[in-house]
Structure formats: C-alpha cells, structure tokens
Length: 302
Ligand SMILES: O=P(O)(O)OC[C@H]1O[C@H](O)[C@H](O)[C@@H](O)[C@@H]1O
Image (cartoon, rainbow, N blue to C red; front, side, top):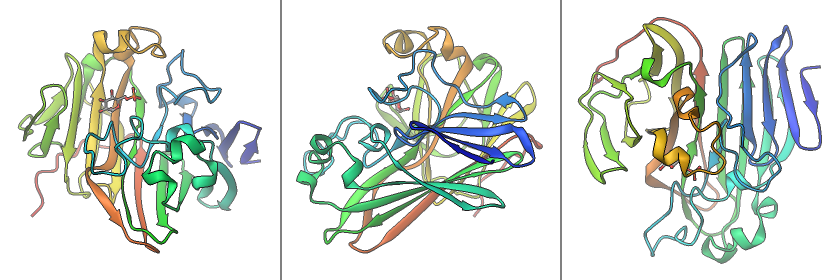
C-alpha cells in the first residue's frame, strides 16, 4: 500500500522501497519526514508541536499568502500573522492522483482556514483554491503548488516552501550557485549582491535571495559531497536561514538548543515581490529536492 491515511497524517511510501517514504501532517499539509533509503533528509525540532496548536518547527511548512510579517499598511495581508495562514490550517487530503510516479494531493480553500484568521486577509473577501501535489521518487521529492483565484476579486500573494534540511554539521556545509544574486540581508536590513562563490555558515544567517534564474540548482555540499540539490520551477527567490545560538534559544519550540548545528533552511519561493493573480487565473510553482550527484557550478546564464 503506497498511501496510508490516519486521522492526522498521510504516509506515502515508494512502492518498491519501504525505506523511502514521506510523512505529511494534514495540519499545514506539512511534510514532517522524508526518508530516502532509510535516511532522514528533513530536520524536525524535538519540541515541534504536531497537534495543530502552532505551525510545525521543521519539515516543510507552507507559507501563503505573505512571507514574514507584511509591513505595508496598504497591502491586504498587513493584518495577517507572520507567514500567513497556510501553515496553520488543516488541509484536505485529496488522495492519490498518479501511480507512477506516485503522487498525492492536498487542498486548501477559505473554508478550511480558521475564520478569524481568514478574515484578517481583506475581511475574507478573497476566494482561492490551493492544490499541493507531492511526488515521491527513488531519489527525489517534488512539491508543486497551484494557486487558483476562484473569486471575483484579484489578489496578490507570496508563496514559499520553508524547507528545513537535516545536516550532520552546519560548519561543514557550503551552498553554491547563489553567486551574483541580489540579496536582502534581513539581519542588517541591507540589499547587496552576493559575491561569495559558496555560502558558508559561522553565525546567524537570514537572507532573501531574489530573482535567480530557475535553471540554477542550489547544492548543499558537505566536505565535497553533494547532500541535496534544490531545483525550482517558477519560484524566482530563495530564503536561506539558520537561527544560530541566540535566535534558536528564543524559539520555545526549537529543540535541542544546539539543533541549529544540524539544520539549514533553503526556502524556494516567490517572496521578493507579491504575485498578482487575477480573478479566474491560476499560478503554479514547484520545489524539487534530489539527493547525490556531482558538484555543478553554474555562473550567470545570459
Ligand atoms: O519562526 P517562524 O515564524 O517559523 O519563522 C522562521 C524564519 O522564517 C524565515 O526563514 C525568515 O527569513 C526568518 O526571519 C524567520 O525567523
């Protein structure tokens, strides 16, 4: 049985490999585990709440319709909490859609969102359907999101896959192919061009990389070995985040406290600008994670 459903979770297993599986919490449609050949690829805090009382600290939380806290009073997302409402709504499991590759879907519409929260977005006047498709392969995991504006009013939104990777030791990790990207450093409030040939981590890190050619793959490399490739479809931006010591101390659901050594967030999204979606229109974007392979340095492709 490739798909098992419980009241709170769905587990998708690769038909020919019981050690390759993905576990999705219906709350937030949050992927909380991706085991590839028995090896866990995602970081999940030991203190993560999995009971629907707050967004999950770890895995792949979904960010919609705003990334971070929207500070623009004229934006209808202004009153929403940090990262919007998709990660703290219980999605509907829509079932398996294809057998090969094995794919399942989850859906979210205004009726599944906590109504007090939903009303904070333009008084609940927007109508939308989100369809999340999760495809599991031998060495890859694809998450595709489709956003449809099913109402009569145009709206604008951010989307982001807030992916927490599990890693052996942050100080041994470098990430490539961000070179020359425009970046907004959230810690110093400044925009500049990334000049480092590889990103490495020795302190708190919180940057929004913008408008990166989707032909570029970000590779998370540990001591010369590719641990993960992050590919994108129609998602021009990517946040890179590690809370390091002080910030993780302040996060009640972040455990163990030295867990920052074993996690790194690389978060493909559409967040530097809001995406406008007209009434009746659809938009989609995807993140494709894959393990292994060679190091490929991609300079700007003109
Ligand atoms: O604590 P959360 O609301 O889950 O946000 C966790 C983090 O998300 C993103 O990576 C942001 O860039 C960070 O500034 C933020 O701290």
